[in-house]
Amino acid sequence: EYTQGMARDDPRVLFAEIDRAHGLLGTDPAATLRTLTALQPGVERCGVPGVRESYLQSLAWALYELGRYEEALPVAAEGAQLSTALTRPESHTALIATELHALALIKVGRVGEGKAMLAHVFATKTRLIGADHEDTRRTKKTLDSFSTIGA
Image 1 (cartoon, helix red, strand yellow):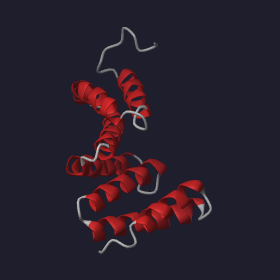
Image 2 (cartoon, rainbow, N blue to C red):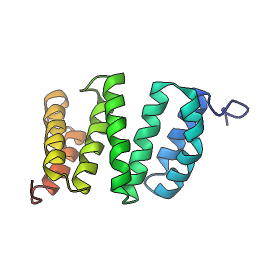
Image 3 (cartoon, rainbow, N blue to C red):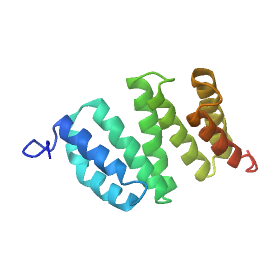
C-alpha cells in the first residue's frame, strides 16, 4: 500500500483511508464508522479543510446508513457547510453533501425543511445537468418518496 510508512495525519494517508472506509458503506457501514472513528485524531491534527470535508461526509453517511439520524444530522450539516465553502454551492460535492443534510433533516422529523432543501438540490441538478441525468433522476425519486410525508 502506498501510504505505508507515512504519518497518520498526512493528508494523502487520510484521503486514502477515508476513501477506503467510504467504499465499505454499501456492505458494512459499521466498519466504515469504526475506521473513521480511528482516523478522527489524524483528521483533527491534519488541519486540511478538504480532508475534514471528506471525513465529515463519510462519517455522516455511515451514521445515516446505521439509522443513527440524530447523530448524522449535525455531522451532515457541518459537512454540507464546509463543502459549500470549499467549492461552491452548485458543485457536485456540495450538492451531494446538501442532499445528505436534507435526508437527515427528514429522518429526524424536520420534514418541511428537509423537503425544501431536497427540492432545491433537485432544481439545481435539473438546471445544471438536466432532468434526464441519472443523478437528477435519483434525487427526484428520493424527493418523490417523501411526497406523502407531511410538511
